[in-house]
Length: 148
Image (cartoon, rainbow, N blue to C red; front, side, top):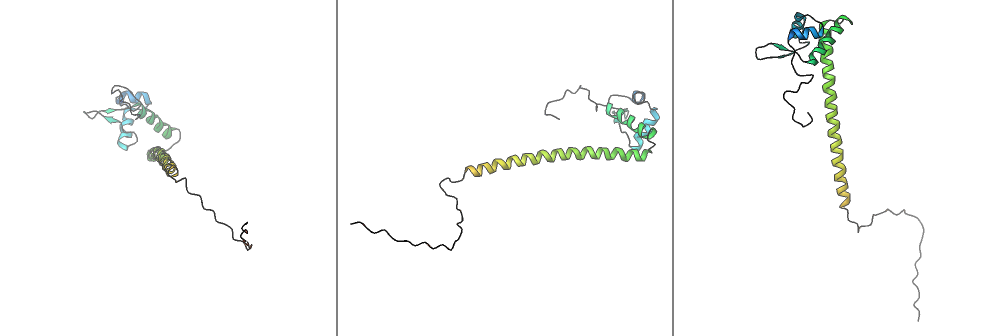
């Protein structure tokens, strides 16, 4: 969520509003097919207090996807279930990657702030040490003669 309070009466694509007969009509499937998909765990709608099924717009889209995979691609229901599980796993992993990227960016920003604070605390009266190269040159020192 984005931090704002949601209107409890606002309909989203995840709001379970369609009874099985309407969901069957919208998806182009027979109600018995929807019950079978629910038993197999392919599309699991929400339930009312009286255990009636309520489908969301997202469920209807998933029903259409299952039908297309079955009829158009010839994939059996076990294969479709595995495809759906893998797609859900990909979505979950993408969300986790986004969370971790945000955490890394936050940590990097905090580290840069701490580094800047350390640099700001350096004493400015110190002179940086530079190593002198050793040579074999000979320097002769002669004191100047005092003038009378």
